[in-house]
Figure 1 (cartoon, rainbow, N blue to C red):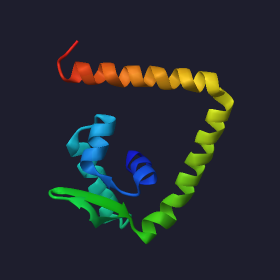
Figure 2: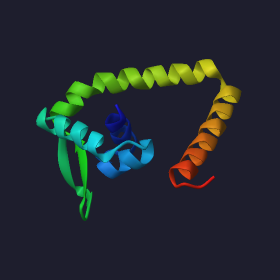
Figure 3: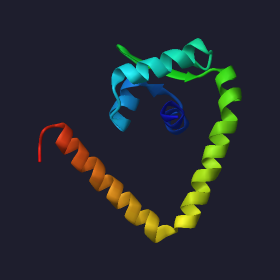
Length: 111
């Protein structure tokens, strides 16, 4: 799902983007991307690749197969935001930013 989230937001994904954004091991994301490529869902995008960092986009097969999942995800997110309301969503966002900052500090050995 994280590959789909990233592609939905930016139009492409790189292994580094996903690992950095979600603090996941490279090996895990490499396996996910490799599997999606073998299934014909992702393809290399030379346009978005930079140096050694390869970028991937959905293939036509990937768009057709995954669009229903993305549509359902979008609807669910919109409903959740609506049900939470602005105040709770704002508070949740602040807490998540604080959590991410604290997590980064701890990952870097700072306190």
